Every structure is written in C-alpha cells, then in structure tokens.
Image (cartoon, rainbow, N blue to C red; front, side, top):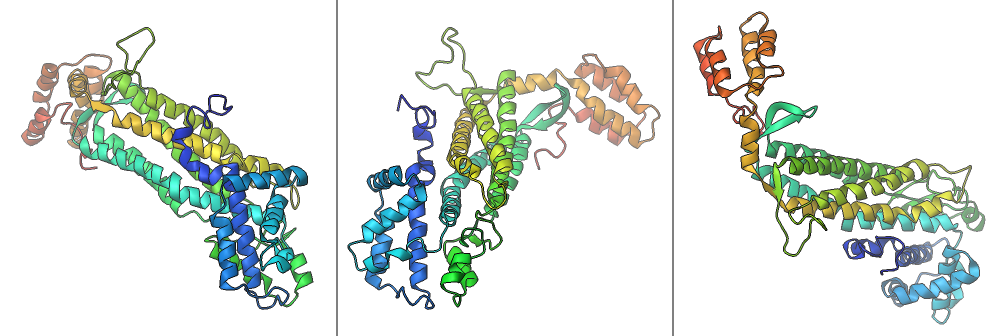
Length: 446
C-alpha cells in the first residue's frame, strides 16, 4: 500500500511476500492455533487423563481441518475476541472453543489450553515460524545467492586482476579467486544455520509442570512434553523459566548477521570494482541512472543491498543481545521484540535479492583489467626479491625497494634488471617469462 508505514509492507512488499505466511500477524495466530490443537490431541492420546477420552478419527480430522482451513477471515475473528480479552493467546483459546462448541468435542473444551501458560504456546509457535521460514524462504534464497557467486567464480577463475591492499597496487589475483573467497565464507554460515537447533518447551507457568502434576500426578509429564515437542519437529528444552530462554533465537540472529556482514563486504567490493571499471553493468532498457546525467549506470543494486543489510543487522544484533535476557522467571519485553523477527528477515531477504540482481548485471571489462596490470610492472619486485633470497643474495629486498618504491617501472626496465641478476639461468628465464598478468600463483586453481 502507498500509505504503508514500513517499506517492507509498501514499496518492497512484493519482494518479501514469501515471508508473510510465516511472520505476519495472521501467521502468528495460525501457528498458535496449530500448537493449541496439537496439545489438545496429545492430551487425548494420554491414557492417564481419563476425563479426556481418545478422539475418534472423525474428531481428529475435524481438529486438523480447523488449522488447515484457517484463513485471514478467520484470523480477523480472533482479533475481534482479542479486543475483549486484551490477551492474544487467550483469544485463540476462546476462538477454538467457539468453533468446537457445537461438535462432539463440546464436552471437553476445558482441556483446550489445559495447564498451559501463554508462553507454552508462544515459544512453540515462534519456534515453528522460525524453523519453517528458515527452511522454506531464508536458506533457499541464501543458497541461490551462493550458487550465483560460485558460477561467477568458475566463469572468471582464470581472469587475472590487479589486487589492491591498502588501496595500492599489490600482488595480482584472479577474478574467480576473489569470488570464491566470498562463496567459501557464505557457505560456512549457511552450513551453521542448517545445523542450528530450534528449541521449544511446554512446562507451565514457571517451567516445573506444577499445574500438570497437581491435576494428574501419575502422568509422566516430562516424557509426554518431550514427545509432543519432538513431534512438532523441535528440540525439547526441559530447563526453562516461564519462557524458553531464546538462546537458540539469539544464535540464529547471530548466524544471519554474520552472513549479512560477509555479503556487505561483497557489496562494497563490487561497488569499488564497478567504480574502478573492472566491471561494467548491463543496461536495462527504460532505466534511468541519474535525473540529470544521462550517461550514468549506477551500482544501485549493491547500494540497496548494503543499506538493507545494515537495517537487518541492527535489528538482528539487538535481538541477539536482548532475547536471552528476562528478569527473574519472566518479563514481557521479549514479546514486542519477537514480533519484529520478520522485519529483520525481510530486510535480509530484500538485500539478498538486490545483491543477486546486481551480480546478474555484471560484465567483466577485460581491457581495464589488462591496462591496470600492464601499468604496474613494479609488482614483479616481489617474486624477483624472493628468488634472490632463495639464492642467499644479500640485501635482496633493499635492491628491489631502491628500484621500485614510489616509481613507475616499465616492462623494459624490469627485464633489464632481471637479466643482470646473480641467479641461475633457469630461475632467470622463469622470471623473464613473468608478467603482471601471469603472476597469479595458485589463484586459478583455488
């Protein structure tokens, strides 16, 4: 909408729409309903709870359809109830009781939300939201970005390029090698996120199953809760206060933030390479680069990615520091922060897509690369002085420093210098064959 307060819901809504089924208000309500329904069915399956008989296949189907058919219209009904209760989780409980009040389950409605605190529902709902959004949206887009970087690395693996260390000409590399560095770094973070555990709890108001045990002291609540959480596809955490401590959420925030920081490094390098002329960008018909300078093709995709990564990381790092901290057995300051998980992920996804678009527009400018290398023959001072050291020539470094430091060295000058070196013929011939374009070490193999 053009009146949206957040650009994620306005200008960029179409680019982050795949996150809405996981982090919107509707999504949160639906995931809460999933947990409430699942707990209701788990209690029915427990033989020690005689007052709640095992549900029939028809009743189980009825409950499953309650979640399956839950849509935005139904979510609005929950919001109407919430206006009266001023409690979002209780509103889901009342909604569920209302939906089942005219069914065969009407006698057992008090077992909905039985012995639960709100955080039993919330912790599991948010854990499932994070897990599902990660598997279905975040990791696939990260993987797509990684794949593109690997493709460019393979495509340009043999293309020599001038390095800049401290902004000054330095030992040559290859374009492909530089992309491969970023691919390797990003891949490590993806692997770590893939291995990340997602935890959940369902143990009552202070994490001790107090109410559960008071009502049914013979039920093995620890085993039942563990099985329930595992059946949701989560890792059971038995050691909590009223809330699951959110350490795993902090770890995920840190993992995404590290991935984002590495991508930020890539964005800035791409910006510099484009500025330097190493890369040009494919033009898009109808696009305008500047409102006053018609010639410009700006690196806007990498700039957009950089800006959104900054926004994402500011939120992710706050969440990482804040979420594991809760006063005594519970305070509510985590709740409003968790509602912004989708915002942090949204800015991340937006940045990944912008970077992908930018990478897809890159064209290697081989002429510029070659000119840069050919005007920096002083780069061969490094291999020459290293060969001199190999043969024990005193003051090797100093001799090359005197020849090259602060000077523009030509091809002819460098080769005349090599011819006079007191080294074996084999080494001398190898040095004479070197040029800035061929002095790439193992870069192409890497």
